Amino acid sequence: MSKEMIVCKGISKSFPGANGSTLEVLKDISLSINENEFVVVLGPGQCGKTTLINLIAGLEMPTSGNVTVAGNPITKPNPDIGVVYQKTALFPWLSVQSNVGFGPMMKGMKKDERKKIVQHYIDLVGLTGFEKSYPIKLSGGMRQRVGIARAYCNNPSVLLMDEPFGHLDAQTRYLMQEEVVRIWEADKKTILFVTNNVEEAVYLADRIIVLSNCPTHIVTEFDVTLPRPRDYVSRDFLSLRKTVNDSLERTR
Image (cartoon, rainbow, N blue to C red; front, side, top):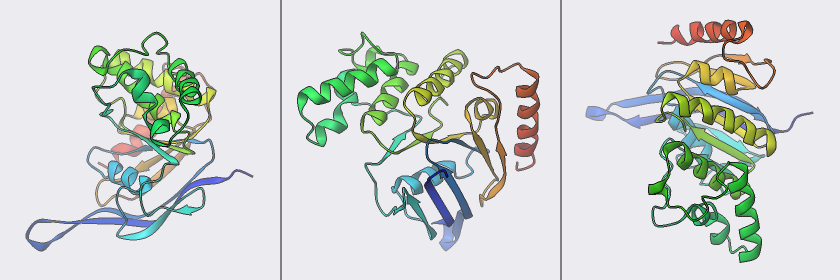
């Protein structure tokens, strides 16, 4: 039986609005994600997907409901949860090697052990040879690889990815979609990936959760059983893409 890694029970989130009003962003969302599952949350722009990520990461608290990760209540940021955002926020004064190894260094890991683990993840994301490079010298796709390696290097049980390829050009985005699947298959983590791109969701996911506009709730789910690696232009892929897209359009 699969182990539940992320569980959200009835979570809602509201923020203060103008003139004393209240803006309800998330409304009664319940979901569960199993160990090593790759789940994509798909929703229209500005529907609260990042708010959901922040609640699971412990960066914000829900107005009601609760979140657990690996059975533990989430009340603050947790080192067992890695996050990759659209903007990688790399330290510009640190090399690739130092950026990737920052978490283990802060944990006090011995230098020799840290160097070995850092190199493993640099190799895994395809940046061998760029260990001494600085972020300013890297392309957008390469910086995202550093962000992914940095998140993996902390050995989290759960990896949250908030539209990590949203700022990349189309060609690089396709490449990074292929790469993130390759990395996930090589070093399985439980991944919750947020996007507003239907094709990306169908390419990546074991399961797609479709969200509505604000106040955001779950509209439907799709189990994606297409074999990997997936073909963007196969009949089955295009058929599922249309079905998912039709579902998303009804939420707009």
